[in-house]
Image 1 (cartoon, rainbow, N blue to C red):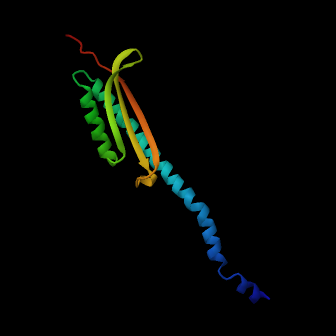
Image 2: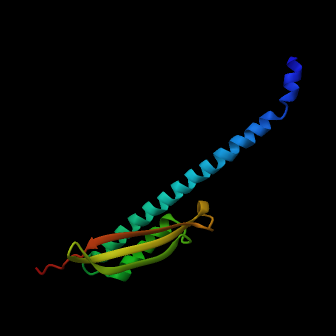
Image 3: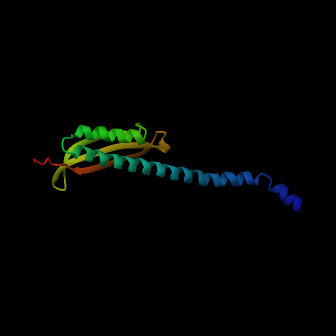
Amino acid sequence: MLRRARAEERGAAVVDFVLVLLVLLPLVIGILQLALVLHVRNTLASAAAEGARHAAVAGSSGPAGEAKVQELVNGALSQEFVRSVSVRPAAVGGAPGYEAVVEADVGLLGFGGAGVHVRVTGHAVAEQAVAP
């Protein structure tokens, strides 16, 4: 009787493994995709804020801010993520300043294809040169 039960269960471990894998694999891929999107978003937000601050320094300009954003993004991420970078003059809380906007597309696990569109902004109030 005991031998008969064992013979009927041959191959059950493979079926159980496949059934568990069907649930766990999408869950793990989803967690990895979320982690990648959050990493890209946080990196771009930091680069946008730093680019706006760089442009807002007395004697600097919007193109210098864009160059700073590109430098920071290239050092941390693949250039394939970034769709556009712009730094332009804008009012920040009623004061003159700069706004940096970075847009990116994050494909499935970074390989491309359909993915998540990320748009982040950074703001900084422009410094005014003080006469001595």
